[in-house]
Length: 72
Ligand SMILES: Cc1cc2nc3c(=O)[nH]c(=O)nc-3n(C[C@H](O)[C@H](O)[C@H](O)COP(=O)(O)OP(=O)(O)OC[C@H]3O[C@@H](n4cnc5c(N)ncnc54)[C@H](O)[C@@H]3O)c2cc1C
Image 1 (cartoon, rainbow, N blue to C red):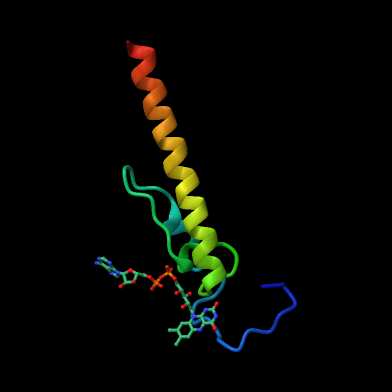
Image 2 (image 1 turned 120 degrees about the vertical axis):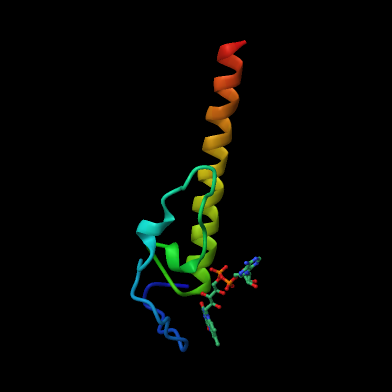
């Protein structure tokens, strides 16, 4: 979706309404369109938030694995 597109659907929340709520609550990583800082309330925001949450989980797993390796 381009920034100049005029969506027919109007998202009910203001952009990034729950972006602060997207902060991880270890071990839970939040996703969902309303947590997106861009395109919040739209499908694009849902996809972006999913990618962000997946990146967070990947980084958390990496640091956990590195922690296990450094102890052994
Ligand atoms: C009528 C309508 C028209 C829309 N039209 C557009 C449009 O034209 N373009 C656009 O970009 N966006 C549109 N949207 C918005 C778009 O649908 C949403 O932004 C998007 O689906 C949000 O995705 P999500 O993954 O964040 O949440 P959701 O799609 O709501 O997914 C959440 C999922 O979690 C599940 N769930 C909830 N609670 C639990 C639980 N306790 N345990 C397990 N599962 C649970 C739900 O069943 C659901 O499947 C529209 C929305 C509506 C309502």
